[in-house]
Image (cartoon, helix red, strand yellow):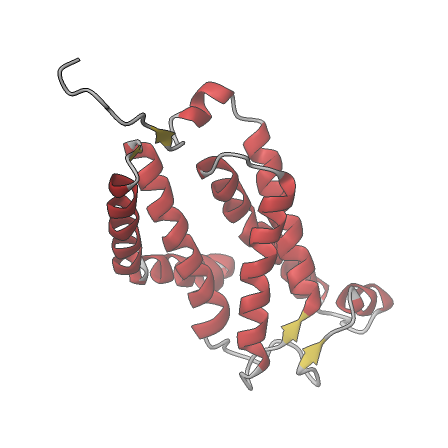
Length: 196
């Protein structure tokens, strides 16, 4: 129940707050698509709006949400890759293994839907694009957290978020190709002769 209160509710409230932004972005994108004579499906539009909303939820949860207690004592930033994992397994967080494991698994799990949606919505999906998309958003979050006194900027979070983006691509690969095509944008040929 604490997981829902601490993570899921702030994520969904951030998604709801990002709804106006999602509608604006999708409206602007549809104008551009109309100008370029590109068609799209309703499933693609809904998926793209959900992607924007999910990114807003992640930003709300990881940047704007103030934790009830400091994340980890005596730590403001970590630029050494996998240092948190080493500290966790060496006993530095004795008695806090559940919280440390939740940080690791939660960091990856939070970005699985992002990697999945990025792969689902755009042609040329690859594991590298999903991984880089998740890494870019996570790096932005960590740079924001670097200047916040109540947050910890941690390179491990970028690593686990990238892993989550890759896992999202793996989930995408499990879906049948016919289902994926409903979410893709199709190019329409320009009509040269209106009489035909």
